[in-house]
Image 1: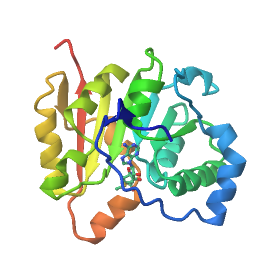
Image 2: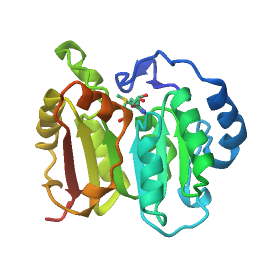
Image 3: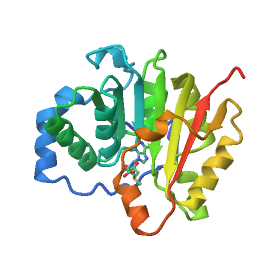
Image 4: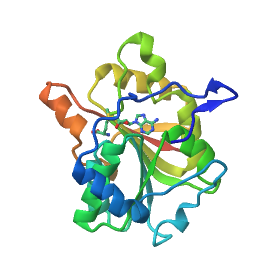
Length: 233
Ligand SMILES: C[S@@+](CC[C@H](N)C(=O)[O-])C[C@H]1O[C@@H](n2cnc3c(N)ncnc32)[C@H](O)[C@@H]1O
C-alpha cells in the first residue's frame, strides 16, 4: 500500500485502524485466485484509466469507499447489472471477502483497489475519471473530539470528490451515529456546489451492510444523506 507521507509530512490523518484482522483461509484463496481478474494494481506515478479495467466503457460508474466485507458492492452490482463499480478498501480480509462473493455470484462489473481512497483519488485515477455516484457507508465515526481529524469526511475530501464526480452526480453518506450525521452536515454546509437531496431513486440502491446491522442491533437510528453535485446553480 502506498505511503501517505509527502516530504515527511502526513497528507491525511489515518481514517482507519492499523489493525488488519486475520485473513481466513477462504479469503486467502479468493485473493490468490481472483485478484488478477478483479483487482487493480498501481505503482507510484501510475495514472489509471478505469475504462482499461472494465469490460465495457458504458454504464454508470460507481465508487464505494471503505466497502468493509463488500456486502453493498455485491448488492449494487446485482441490482444495477449495467453499472461499473469500483470499491476501494484498506483492509485485506474485507478485500478477500468481497472477491469470494464476486466469484460465487459470477459478477463481472466490480473492480477493487487496495489502499487509502484519498490517495488513490488524488494521485492514481486519471484526470478524466468522473463517477456518477460516490458512496461512503458507515465510515469509522471517531466520536472522541480529539480524534475528529481522523473522520474521513472532511472539506479536503469533498473538494477531491468535486474533481472526480460528473455534474449532477450523487454522493451518498450513511451513518448510524447521530454525531457523525451532524459532522457530515456541518462539513457539507461549506460546499455550495453540493445540494442536499432527500427523495430519489438512489435510495433503493443501498444494500444492508455489516456495520449497519451492528448499529441497528445497538438501537441506533440510520441516517442516509444524499447530495447532488451541481456547481453551476
Ligand atoms: C466502519 S467500517 C464500515 C464498512 C462497511 N462500509 C460497512 O458498512 O459495513 C469502515 C471501513 O472503511 C475503511 N476505510 C477507512 N478509511 C479508509 C480510507 N481512507 N480508504 C479506504 N478505506 C477506508 C476501513 O478499512 C473499514 O473497512
